[in-house]
Length: 169
Image 1: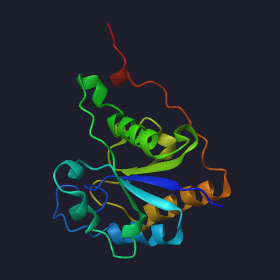
Image 2: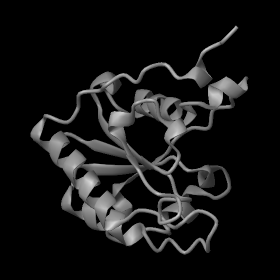
Image 3: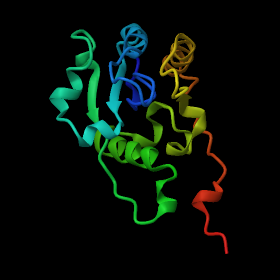
């Protein structure tokens, strides 16, 4: 049996170019890949989760993909500016701890246009904020999900500590 693979997904700069009309023009590329992987679950990790109800967020997706929406990450308030670095990943890990029986071994990746949100760069599909999610990004997502399915893509590479995350005296 194939285990669940979680996709933590941003909206701005992913589903549409950042700063342009919020028409979700790139979402069909993501949905096409998700349709190929019944075990894939999307978790919304966008700031939109604080502005709109889950019902409105899910309504952005096609009817057949909606059952694969697993929820949205919790919102954590950073105490310092340094805590902003990797914040989305910490929110994703909190979500996994609340929803997956073995969060340390969970198969997950992220789609985001801001690399500073994710310390585990090996799990990040980084989009170009000026273009949003492209066919090339779809190929990358497909490879990640195929790796999870094959049992070879779950090795988490720890990122080196960032200068932003260190207290430099």
